[in-house]
Image (cartoon, rainbow, N blue to C red; front, side, top):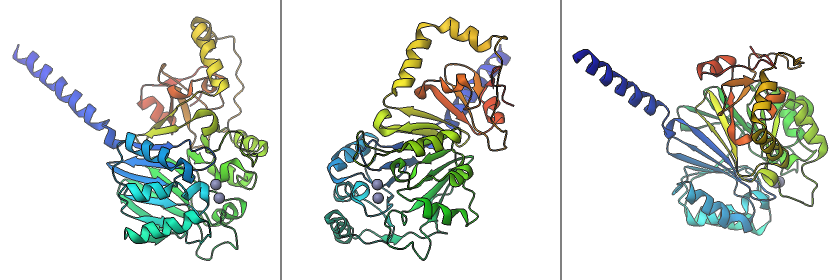
Length: 368
Ligand SMILES: [Zn+2]
Ligand SMILES: [Zn+2]
């Protein structure tokens, strides 16, 4: 009896410990806000909040209420990637209404009224202000590595987009690359620096414009997830088919704020999940099909008659995708991996991580 009690006590302890290791504070949560044609991303980690861009001025109130709804009462850092209206306009509301501890700016000037108001507010509120430069690291938390990849010390000539602040954020094995509106010139320059560009999640440069996302750059980044922040029916034709194809050619899964709404990536540093406010048309289609035909899907998935064509080259940095509703993991290019509902996806940085989470390889795409 005594022994039994001891065992019961031990198992309670184990449950308590494992609950602590998966507490929310261990997760990095990155929100890609749907701000129409513009950019805004919120990073939350260990009680700290960072805002990269704030959308355009008319979207400022929506960004502010999104932040408040996600428990943000102050911001440890605001990063303005470059002084274009669709990135800094909304920051006017944020700087006015929410305490900000520090601003990181691209160091470029612009004559837009929003930019002058932005500078006036920083001045009036006495917010410490720093200019970003390649080679800097941002010390937000010892477990989070934030590197400034661009702009370089001597900035690109006369191009506000090219001089956007580009950031790589790494939490253990999972990394994010935030491009702002940087384009091909910045990409080519970054490729000469020796930075490890491989990133799991890419915030695609310049809203999917063909002035960014060059194939050689994407080949180095090899994103599993590409997120395009873009407005529906925008006047610029963003994103272009050329960029969408280039992203698809890397084997990347594409999310867009115009079709998916707000997109949230949550990671414990080993695996990550992506949740989107709205399902895109194709994902919704697959979901209703699989909901109607669950037994057929299962029998096809595990059927021996299926021949597999696995074209993905194995690499030590390969990512794998699974569903929270099953225990299989797949190559991102696998037909079954592609059919997982976005809100059910869970991503692993290696087969070891997938197996450590209790997942087994898909028999169709046969990952390691
Ligand atoms: Zn922009
Ligand atoms: Zn811009």
